Image 1: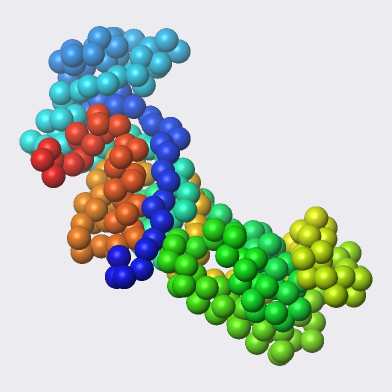
Image 2: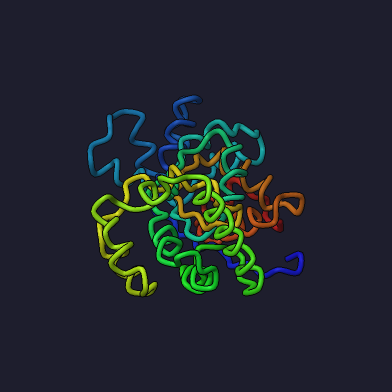
Length: 273
């Protein structure tokens, strides 16, 4: 894409709520339980569900009423009773910014506040040796861009930002490493690799990203768990699986579609599209 190669995100469906709750909601609106092709939904007309019935409701695979409401009557609020949760690994921080525009979702994201220790340790251990830093960080697989020359440019820019911050802050090392690791800087100042290993094995600086997350670019890899109701997912796929969308979120939307069972796609994506 645009002359630069990128890695695809990985997507797994963690949980699905099934179609049954949504049909039960729709039948409640119309008081039409007896019209269902699903016996357990019919029974809801006269009884409250026990544990066995609840399992049967959540195991329902097909509902003609939901299909009619989705494609004939466009009663999409019923789809809000269906929830899908995805584990996403290896999308980008740029995609995260796009995701935030979708209001109706629950989202939990890998935090830069707590997960930058290895990168900061590589900088501290480099003793201002840019080549050491680039070589070390290149092995972290932390960027969605896979073009090797571009990766070096991105990592080199991170080094330059950190070096500038270090030149402006006499307390740089107290921000970068835990107090118990500070003596290591003197003990292993002549052995960059050994210093890096010692810092990695030592106590991690809490919230290290607070001081350094400004170095992160849109190509920084992000892992997250997101939950959509089916109506919101319909909107998401409509907008993000479109050629007008940011190309990296298109990549993610396509992987999410692959991970979504057909029974849900049948209610939100027109066949043949």
